[in-house]
Length: 257
Image (cartoon, rainbow, N blue to C red; front, side, top):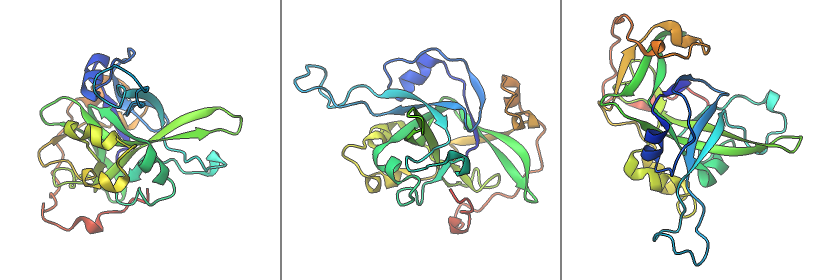
């Protein structure tokens, strides 16, 4: 699952990572939560016929500011519809809520890392800041859906795809966001020629030792706390037994999204 994440890189660094021409200035964001606007990147539009621009059939990738919480186009009453901030990658291509986005609107979600809570007796327990072990940015697999509101205005909405957690994260939570490697950005974003089945191999857990999980205080629990102090290392909790890397993850899929 991914219910909170952070993007603290500079706009220039985020643009270079995603292959975007440029980004408007934005401040570091340490505690991004559902319903808030998030940065996503999509493939560019086809070049105009006769263009003498570089040998490519696509313009530069495009940034989008998207409400985190996908609303399918067919929803009539958003008040009666659940908040879809995550999508289970295993069934997203078949599920009505995500089928169109998986085919036509795949995206990248840049992040400096994400937060996860180790469950304890069915309750939210120790929070962790999960970040790339060697620093830098990651790109989560995202989906975008443009929702037409009854009044006629449109709103871009999105979700982050999740997968069974690898052995580094499974002792904290049984799900983790799908990470798209930079060499696979173009494949994932290519909705013109590649269908969901053609990119299904990208929907896998991150490699072992890619992430490190840092215990932090419960400051992150409150969305109103948005400063860097929420990422400071907290007391080391008693370590939970890690799942055997060879264990069957088929019984770990508890989320309905």
